[in-house]
Amino acid sequence: MNMELCDSKEKGKANKQSATWLYGIQITGLLLVCILQFLNSMILGSLLISFNLSVLIARKLQKNLKTGSFLNRLGKLLLHLFVVLCLTLFLNNIIKKILNLKSDEHIFKFLKAKFGFGATRDFDANLYLCEEAFGLLPFNTFERLSDTLLFYAYLFVLSITVIAALAVAFHNLSDSTNQQSMGKVRKCTIGLKPETAYNLLHTILFGFLALSTMRMKYLWTSHMCVFASFGLCSPEIWELLLKLIRLYNPKRICIMRYSVPILILLYLCYKFWPGMMDELSELREFYDPDTVELMNWINSNTPRKAVFAGSMQLLAGVKLCTGRTLTNHPHYEDNSLRERTKAVYQIYAKRSPEEVHALLRSFGTDYVILEDSICYEQRHHRGCRLRDLLDVANGHMMDGPGENDPDLKLAGHPRFCEEIKRNLPPYAAYFTRVFQNKTFHVYKLSRNK
Image 1 (tube, rainbow, N blue to C red):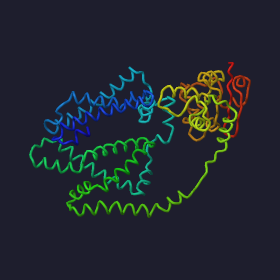
Image 2: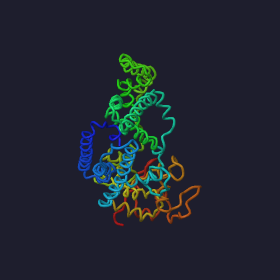
Image 3: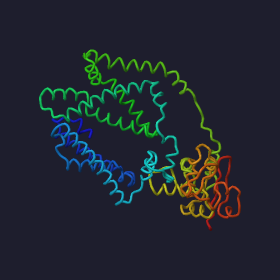
């Protein structure tokens, strides 16, 4: 849609051919990524591949989008957009059914619940919903961005480029054939080169993504810096602005494009240089004796081929520090790994020792690491603690005061991570404690059960 709106009619044929090549290159690139990532099935089921295929099909089905009156062209363009979106969803659904892909279904469950289209008890989706980083972007983010002048510079450049984009889109959709109107199109197009239109579209999409999900602000803020810097140093942006306010002069353009960035840099150096130097001079040492003790014990007292189960975060450290084999790890964009992680996390649910032992041994587990910080977690509110998410997913009532859904039932067993520490016979028959400190408890699984 961006190409159709911002491309001039004289270059239409060349642009269509270039766009077709671009979509083909993107599809080829994604297929190569799939191969290089050891046939990562999530790439094949991505919306981007379906979107590129849909655009190529829609461009064949719908031709002459730029003929007729303004309303006629606008209607054709909106219909084109609707066809592309419907085709994208249809092809994506077909590809996933044919290849039996479920790698990204947790993302759609998360989005559905996040935007109020129905609650979910899905364990994976709730892991995201309960994290603050996946909430809405807090308002104080704009205050912090304003302190560095980034937000003001960004809004300034964004406003100018949006005005240029709307003007170009209006002229391209208008049925204007006289030379005077075409001259205006060319003048307007000067202020909106293809690379500018491309980055404008990206920064708007990144903005919506960051506003809806705070964790995605890393995409937006970095792009804000690039976009604002481009605009402040761009002669085209200053030319367009000065023409709009009827103060255009080539010398003024030169003065503005150099003086404004220099003044902003001087202000930033004056305000932030001392604090930045203080931060760089502050040296700290990582101090976590319990984790260090655990890693040293694993290195010294377990076989090199021993298999460990535990939380995703901890096992990443175990792999890095000891090289031991893991049952699960933080790569969450794979359906089988998500199911495996959920099964391993039953060590924090209300399950019998027989069930937990069978689950862990099915993955070849030799040792399981329990963390008090998860078993007795207080960081999240009730309903968002890991043990609560597991209880709800298993159909059990949550611990502590508060309401439960009417269909949830009392669990038939106590919480495994608490009860195993009492070393009662049903647990001792399957699990033997071999290490403990203030934070971690390591149990060796019996093999003869």
